[in-house]
Length: 173
Image (cartoon, rainbow, N blue to C red; front, side, top):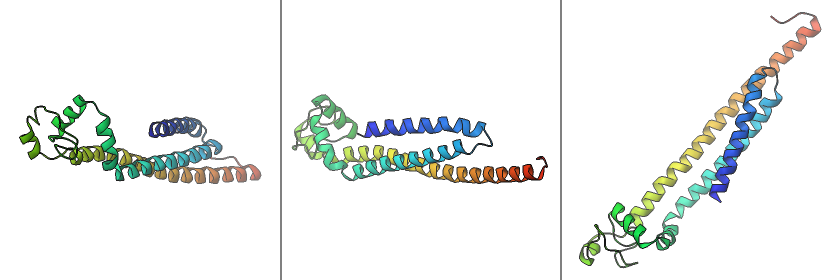
């Protein structure tokens, strides 16, 4: 689901970018700028939802990782043990560790902690980067919406003065 949501968000962002081009190339048109503003708002909401889902996932990381650990092949678990310098998942006995360069025998394995702590820390650090980036994009979107609102107000004011000049018969400077 997260990959599909990220793809949808990327597509919406690309469409939003495409609406920027006519909005900037037609300095008197407000329709494209309004459309761009609405699409930026939609992007911000989708990004915020993705960020919140990822943030909630970090709250359940430790419980979800046990199934991830169990689903891995022995070689992958051994590589994780070597990278994280730990033995087994909860401890060297539960589930049993695999002998490798870190866990050379049961005595050494019993002295090392299980991989659940370092593994969840590694996963949380990765997820923290992603949801922080998603929330950062929302902040940029809010700033962009404010800029769009100012530009819309400026264009509306210029259009108003242009109509006044047309009625009075004078041309713009």
